[in-house]
Amino acid sequence: MVTAPDLVIDPSLRDWVLFPILLVMILVGILRHYITLLLQSSPKQLDLLAIREQQSLARGASLRSNGKLIPPSSFQSRKTYLIQAFKNGIFLKDQEAFKNKDEPKPPANPLAEPGGMDQMLNMLKGNMVMIVPQTLLMSWINFFFSGFILMKLPFPLTVRFKSILQSGVATRDLDVRWVSSMSWYFLNLFGLRSVYDVILGSNNSAGGGMDMAGMNPGMMGGGLQPGQDIYKLYLSEAENIELTTHEYLLEDIEDRILEKYE
Amino acid sequence: MTTIIDTLRNAHTTSSYLTLPAESLQSLYDTSYKFVTSGAAARSLHPEGLYNVFELHFFLSIITGKDSEASAILTTLTDRFGQDSHRVGVLRSIYLEATDGPVKALEFLSGRQDTELGTLKRKIVILKSSNQTSLYISELLKLVDNYPSDAESWAELASAYLEAGMYAQSIFALHEVLLLVPLAYNINALVGETSLLYASSLHAASSSHSVATEERLLEAVKFFLRSVELCEDYVRGWTGVLVATNRIAAIQKPFSDTSKYKRLYDVARKALTKIVETKDASESDLNAAQLVLKNY
Image (cartoon, rainbow over all chains, first blue to last red):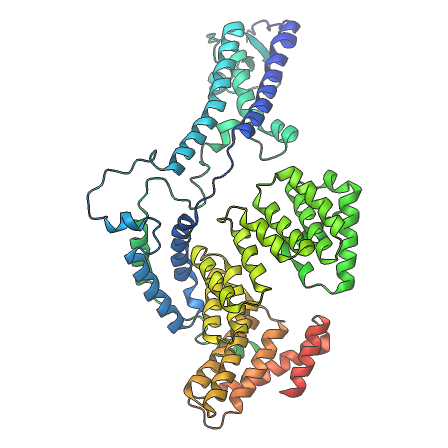
């Protein structure tokens, strides 16, 4: 088997490209963390009626799931009350709009609500903090170091890794173990998470949007999305409560205890 | 070191410092004082845990009457979180109430945003000390109307109703707590106790045995049993079972079949005797258990 003569890498590539990229990535991550902290707006206080509007919905849910713990009469009276209240919309913060609900209204615009606007702006800020430095870094590397081979991995890999480790280098026969500058950048982008955790403590935002891709802050925790018609939620909750049957958990508790202790 | 941290953290999450006897309170205060002033705190705790310990130390200082210490820790917290933080606001109002009296505290609270749950609760609690029961209850009602998923407010409403002798309303509020905290054995026992009191008041009103009284008693037994089902060594639950079944046994002409309750009485007596013998409860609980065993 003929082996190609091994490549020899100039040590100044290591000193002037490999380490600088790593260093810059770490620093940019730390910077991003602090910028995110600065840009974060404090959560806005809802007014009392809005809180009531949202919490009342939770009340229906807790009656459905834990109603079995209270006596039938107690359950029944709550059931009747909540269904009536939900249907008549007495928990709604905007009673005026509820009275005119039969009039056709334009489709809800998430930007019209002050809360929705805030949320959009926050998401936009988060994305900007992520995208701007990424673009800059990438063009920096592309401009100065495109096509550089920076290091050799100490273990063999299959050909499949070629596209990951040698992006920006169009040499088909090069051994997969050689890593190009662009790939080094990507490896850092995805792999520095634990380094940030060590430097900044857990729960930092240096990794930017990487780990947030799956979850959107604000959309979590059962919060209402802007533009959603809460009255429709009330109606479906009323329906759910109506369908709930009551099985009193304490009905035969005397027998249960006797069986256990006698 | 870790054990000290755990003790303090435990005290904060369970609020056990509110019910501690004086000596243990003092020793807990000494521990937290040493911890907070030594600077070990900042090194060994995650920030959130650290500030929880600070908050605990504030409460302990207030309870043990060390105003200057409380003021110092309050300043630290204010420096860190600013005046606007609602938790700091609550602490400041507590400090003002302890030093300058409730009027000053109310004044301070009315200058704050009135949508924060903590601020609202503090305002109402200060009302409580002014002995205006009906106003107190109506304010609590407003609170639970706005925050129906806050179990603490419902529980406070229940105790306010209980004090006013309105048992049915109190039980209603306790049921609401149960819907939110389904496994709270102490609330179950509390429902039982309130039902017992309700039964007594109904009995006193009609002077003869009625269906309503009996229903209350049976329901009391059910809730006491539920509490000991959730927590097997719960002295309050077992004593409740004992007292309630004893009352049922004393009924001359019961409306329903009460044979089961005689057996439940024996079960409760056995369980309580065992707890007393093994001393498997706190001092005051054991005394109460012995008293109940003697009288019922």
